[in-house]
Image (cartoon, rainbow, N blue to C red; front, side, top):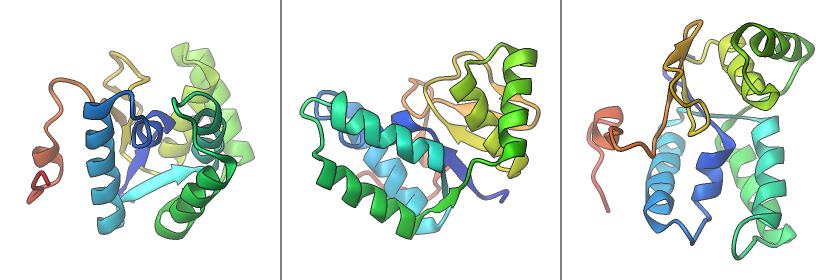
Length: 155
């Protein structure tokens, strides 16, 4: 899965967040490009977090039906990883060893054990890489979408 990029919940949420128009456009472009090229990977954890936050925290929130439809689309067009016992154990090791929040550690563990080298997320702060998994903030001022996706053209 060396060509794969895992996406954290915040990237999915920004795609539907009308209150953050620049992040919304960036998230939509990233998600579209990953889907079209078959590079995008999500976990069942990310989809569950997306549902809860999209129907409760977005302004305006998605309806249950709208969120269901979005999740269904991701299930059909993205690779979805399940959370397994070994991922939970590795996440606990991430908490213990790297002082990560558990849910972030579970994202890291899912990527690490699935050999996915890149995670797009806002949540990992200054941690550039941990044990072969590199974290990239796709909303950071230094993120260049054209460098990540050659041939990308803004709409």
